[in-house]
Image 1: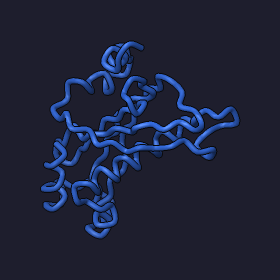
Image 2: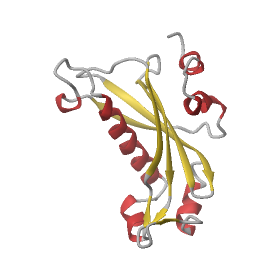
Image 3: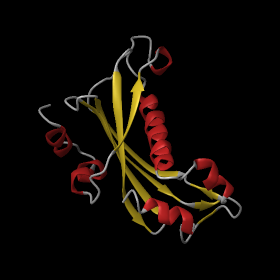
Image 4: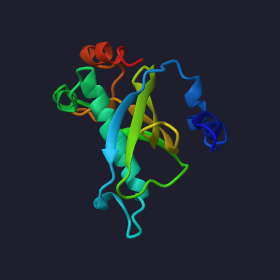
Amino acid sequence: MASSEQSQSQLPTSAIENQSTQKSDAWFEYIVRVHPHHTDYAGVVWHGTYISWMEEARIESLRSIGIEYAELVNLGCDLPVVELSVRYHKAVKFGMVVAVRTRMTNTQGVKLDWDYQIQSLDGKELYVTARVTLVTVDREKGKIMRRLPPKVEAALTKLY
C-alpha cells in the first residue's frame, strides 16, 4: 500500500472510508509493544487484541482531556459500544511497536464516533483502520441519556 489515504479509499466499509473527511485532524497517539499474550501460536497479533488496544487508546485519550472513566461511572454514565467496524490491512507481529491513533469525530447528541488507525511508529505502514460508535447510557435507569453530563460535554469539546 502506497499510503494510508490510498488504502482507506479502497476499503469496502463506508464508516471507515469516511475517516479522511472528518472535521477533527487531532489524533491522540497510544504506543503499544506486542507481547506474547497478544499473539497466536505463529506470533501474529490475534484480531481481538486490536480492539482491546483501541479501547485503551480511547480511555487514555479521554484521560488526556481530564475525563477519568471512573468519574463517568461515578456520574452514573456508561459508554457502551453500539457499532464497530474494523479493517485489517496488514498483520502486526510479536516484538513490534505500533502507534494506535484515535480521534473523536462526531458528537451528535449522545452518539460518539471514534476513528482509529494502527500504524508503524514512522507512519509508513498501516495495519488497521476502524470506527467505533458509543452512546451514553444512564447506569441506574439502563436507558440512553438524552444529553451528556455537562462536565463530560464540556471536556469533549477539547477533542472535537
